[in-house]
Image (cartoon, rainbow, N blue to C red; front, top):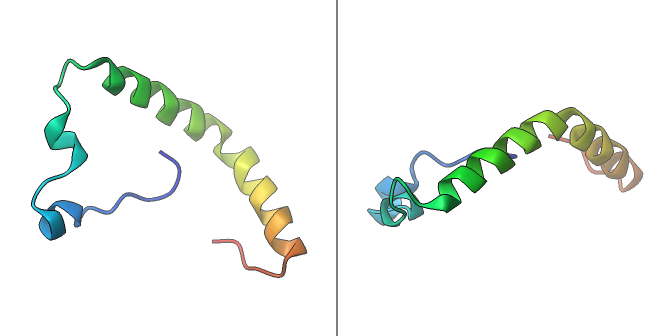
Length: 61
C-alpha cells in the first residue's frame, strides 16, 4: 500500500477490516498484487508528486 498504515487503528476501533476478511478470500491476493505494483511504481509516483507539489508550493513528504 502506498503511504503509511496506522498500527493503532485496532486500538482505537477495536477491530480492523482485516478482522472481517477470511484468510483465503481472493481480495487478499488482489491486495498483495496491488501492494507489489505500488511498491514498484513508488519512485515514479514520488517524483510525479514532488513536481506537482513544487508547482503548488506544497512540500512533498
